[in-house]
Image (cartoon, rainbow, N blue to C red; front, side, top):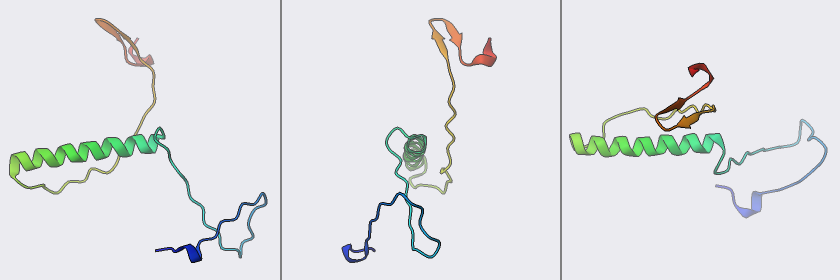
Length: 88
């Protein structure tokens, strides 16, 4: 666990040299596709656990850790509509 004694922050406009120790991190906010997928998978896992508990009294083994978010367009309309360009 890092402590305040061994954390260093440096902001530079030039690339680091190969021998310098460098660490990079990425922050994904609330609306980021990875965050949306993580939330959907977490909700599905919780629902599956509840269903297992109700049906079997114990949570069974499952693998639910992958998600794919695909963007698209739709044209909803009362009584019909189009879900994508291929559905003309």
